[in-house]
Image (cartoon, rainbow, N blue to C red; front, side, top):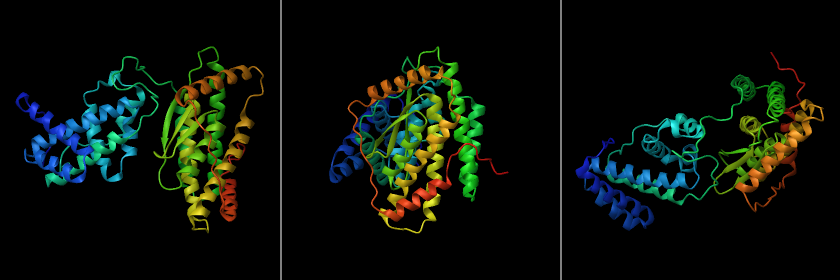
Length: 376
């Protein structure tokens, strides 16, 4: 019922009026909102669906102007609304020529499993979900613009490339590390991934030394509880890989600034280590919130130490690399300051000693010393 159709000229005025009523409903109290919903529903499924699409498209258009990306919109809404927002994004973005989208936009849109925008029966509850989603989207805050918006003329033709063969090897190693039940094997596989990407990053730094050093940014969304220590784990991986991070506690995401190669390994390794830490936590004896929080904080602390050691082991000793890395670090700092002026440092504390010790022990098992051999 209510599959999306393109309205003809005679109905566009009605669609615009009904879409405005849905948008108004998102800003009103429950009673007044239901009155607007009933008015829209009275016009039938076809017009109600077209009005829903128009209202959602406008909310998304404003969201893009506030610096959001399509995948982030899906991550930010409540789970019951993810299907609807995905369909709305698919409908809205059909009018964006792929040739005028930034590679990040193209990648995120390609990863969305968007179905045609349709309203389920009965119509009034379906419209209430539309109103709820419009309200959620309109309430999302301004974010720093990290890539050009849709159809902006300065969108680049391609993303600075990390060798896909290297990335395939790294992803394969981390996938095995996440799936193996053996801590020593997971340790060796994660170590090999860090070693491989660190060596590649240093090689890239040398080969691009004569090029302008351009740092970029991205955001990594966290899942589940204990997001503060999870953000600390991301920061541990980021700083070990020459990136900087900032945590958005109300949104549950981490902003990352660095060079493309460093950002790739940061995102991949942080995601893998988060999976490994969650698995280790399920086997830990403590069940209180304080214990689990301390476990994850300690895990991030020890992982940071191990990553620094692993990176230092593969870092070239030539003094010729020093000015190159200094220039790259300055580019990262400049980009970070431009995106996040006046940022404040916030410490994450842990008060449960047994959880802290268990977290350190688990991180030791995920040690990233680069000279361990991968188990066959």
